[in-house]
Length: 82
Image (tube, rainbow, N blue to C red):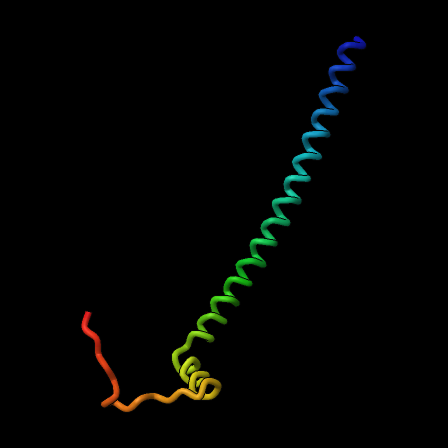
C-alpha cells in the first residue's frame, strides 16, 4: 500500500511539474509574440521612412538646397549606350 501511495504522489508531482513547465513555456511564447509584433510595427515604420527618404523629389530638393546642385541644361546631357 505504501508503494502505491508513493507511486501516486510521484505521479502527482510529475503532473504538477509538467503543468508548471507548460505555463512557463506559454508565458515565454506570449512574450516572443509581443516582441514579434513590436518588430513588425518597427519594420513597417522603417519601410515608410525609407520610402519617404528615397522619394525622388526629396532627393532632388536636398541636392539643390544642401549641396547646391543644379540640373544641367538639355544640351549638356551625355547619353551612354550599353
